[in-house]
Image (cartoon, rainbow, N blue to C red; front, side, top):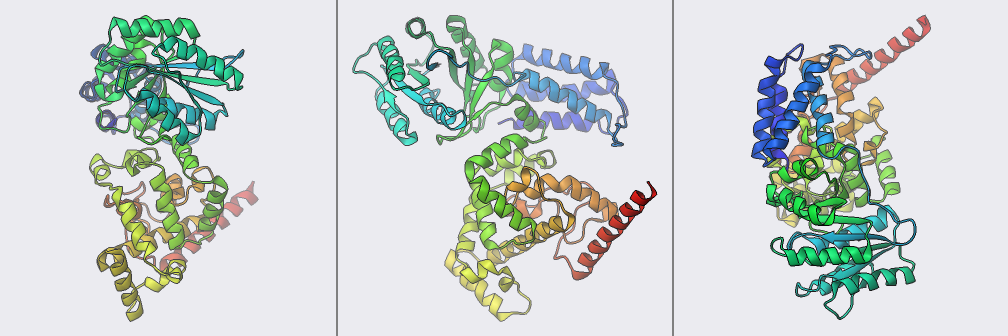
Length: 537
């Protein structure tokens, strides 16, 4: 949803490329690029001006050091990016905040908002998230007494997530809310989420009823559920609700939609209320705790590894994932692992969102990102599922090396999966490239860390290290046998080749025995040099 804003920051960074230090002259074009993107994204004008002025002052006041203590060279553009990141974090809410918990009884959350914002659905999403993450025991209270079938909808959602739903056969929302809290106490439940009525627009009757509910139940949290797709109207709505109810936070919905992002970027600064949760999809598990730092990283194209791991832990059993990752990093990678990998990524959400959270995000152009196709996941899966058990476990059976057997196997797989033989051949080639990448990382000892636990994504966290190896092998010449950047992964989802990685990691084709031997010699030489240095000390 932040494509416009992200592109603005990319353009700003390009304008500072090659600059040794930041000056008022060279920073102005960069800020202009950001300004255009923020206004196009429907960010409030006053907020935009203040944001840019803060960046200007902090960037110009900062002393630019071209070489860090670690020896790593940095640029004026790097300092500018860091300044933008810090300001964005503050812009989006600063330190991460949580719901206010009641120490003397059930924690009460009152959900308010306009009709159609998604209050009922997000009441269930919030109950599921807090039950799973914070081990709370929730009760849903259906206090929307006006919308037809609102109570039935909440009961259905409650059944899906195995959370009790309380309501009464009355149109008195205050009574329903009060009796709901009494029921929670009697059942030793420690969380009450009250779904209230909405209107198509803010009116006095709506606010009066909500004020009556608030006075009767004294909730610790009053959260406004607001649709991010309505732009600056979302901010005005938040201000109106806050004036009458004194909100404690915001739940922003439809962050996965094709929105311009202005509401998310403005709501904190305009209302002073933090975004606590963000809806990222239609299913009941698509709600996440809003992390300003993670969102700032995504906007700047720096990724959000914490958020990525959060998505991953929802999608798969961690013990199983660790065993799978260990197998892969030991060089064992077959079509069964490949099928598991694309299945896991599919569960983590739209592939564009997954890639946006990786450290490679800034290197993927908007054009390449738009080519990424989620439907390709199921297509690739159907091809693998048409293979025999023997073929999945031994992918080399499908290598065409003047082998009539391999050709007949591919023809059979193509027919069984309703794909062309070329599509099957392309998939096998992509798989072989990925297997070589896995073996390369295994040989270089690049496993480990959080990212290594994600089947098929462990290589993303190690690209920087691999770039160093590429430089040792001659810099711009490219790493022999490696797909162009993330070509294999990009092609797998229909996006074409991803951009080349730092250090000239271009190239293509199968890695020859000579290339592997040269790599082994290089590793041995580096090891010997390291031992010599240690002896001299």
